[in-house]
Image 1 (cartoon, rainbow, N blue to C red):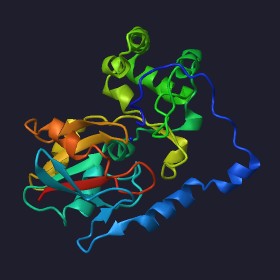
Image 2: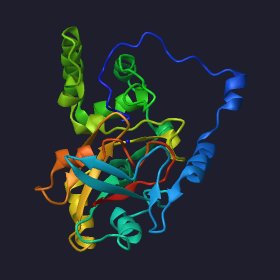
Image 3: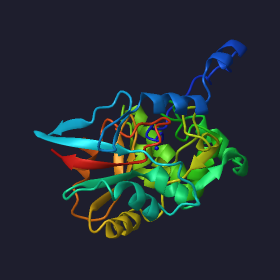
Length: 275
């Protein structure tokens, strides 16, 4: 997904336009997808370990496996419950937790919007200039994603969040913007060169009913616990769970290194299994 985890702060310069040489040398999104697929390691159990990711992590003295599941490219023509049942159900064991990215859920809810269909207002263009771009995602640092935040959260709330964030920075405090703007702003994903096509030309909003979606999937899987996650290479949050008693803080710790990856791995879901 962040992607959108960056707080609002000043940007002194915009990225330089690529030269002909660098443009020719840089692989496009489809080439990146092919490279990621070639580097993935598939186990005999049918799971995938993504490049530069570890299958196992230790949290509070307990070992957990994070078993990534490769799927087709999920679109609004899919039903997310059917997709999870197709790919995850044959692999699930007692005690497992199935986790799925918020982006996969949102795409099936028609919450992926082509860039050309978004027409930013002047306020969106202005506010987007004060958001830091990072290698992990564009967040709200482009007019189109900021426009979506204004629509999703309301103009007054975004302006208030920006004002409070500016005050916080005076005291060296970050994070206030998204704390006030809320998960709908934090979950907006903008297009990046490493995003799997066709979503490298889309803005993807946060999912509707994340708790409800998790519950629907859990019922289809016979009661297996399910979480809808928003994890990136900086931080993460759990947007929805099938059971309110699930430990969201523990889930964030288990997934903190983003085992599903943030590029073109095509692994939008996985299984957490205690060793």
